[in-house]
Length: 396
Image (cartoon, rainbow, N blue to C red; front, side, top):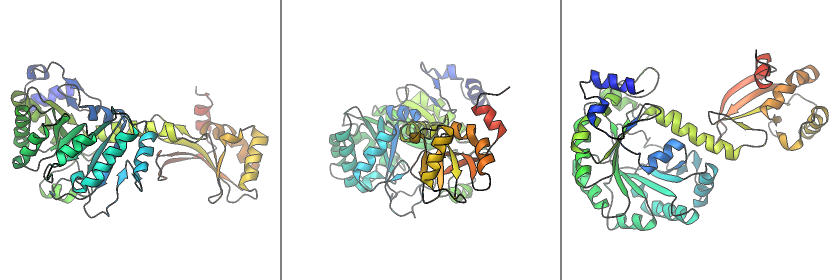
């Protein structure tokens, strides 16, 4: 990974990593980098221990690259779960063994009372060390709202100023004892703004500047294409965004030596943060018949019995009596007429079941996301001799 970045620096006529002079330069899994220890909120994100609380979509800034669909109905969510009460936030954070939560939108300040209630409720249900950070453009603060957020227990505030005229709000935030930084996309051709922001953070003793890899989404695709941006073939990241980040790194080192500069790639968000959070959730929400996978999914065996003369209860008895499967390892859904077993158990008995019940059942090995919404990612029909070799340890 270091060699790849060194090659990019050379192609861009930028100093090498060593010449940049960082004492604690870290290359991160997923292709990102940081010039010092990551902000705590980012550390937790990478561990998958940070819940994401989406307060609402409203934001009056209208950045062309925004990834949020402003036309969506106002629905608050914690991770992928729709919120009906403040306690939904707590139960979801418990489900992922959370160490913290981020408040995002839109701009949470537009929903200030809801935001304040959420911060207080989380702090009341977890320890004072439970870390909360908030994203905001900084354009909607009024009266003494910064002070109210600090009093409620907010630990870290991240600004996304639309232009330099809003830097003053970041300076006001330094009056309180929380971590203060900024987070913006690394936009090719707009490196000067990021350098100006880094310089300002240095002057006010700000803590960090996060650069996110610019990427295509359904909501911003037309605006990005209109400006001449294109994506990589293998992901939705904008070509040139990582190069822009490296340029900001090089010049930012000169004007903001005490500010943490951190580049977060689209791969990090999609394949590391999300995967790690799913792994934590899968471990906690798995039914006795579900097995968490290394990718953070849930794997299980499924028998479709809609053509069978046996009821679901009779199927449970049949599996217990004929295959010695413990009752607590068997699940079922009467409405869909499905029986669920641990993946390895169904693979082991699939051939025998196929011989006895071939005309009345179908069997499969299923993987799904460990979230409330039933999203299936993979279905492998059974019996399958190759799967038998894998699960029963008979590989050559």
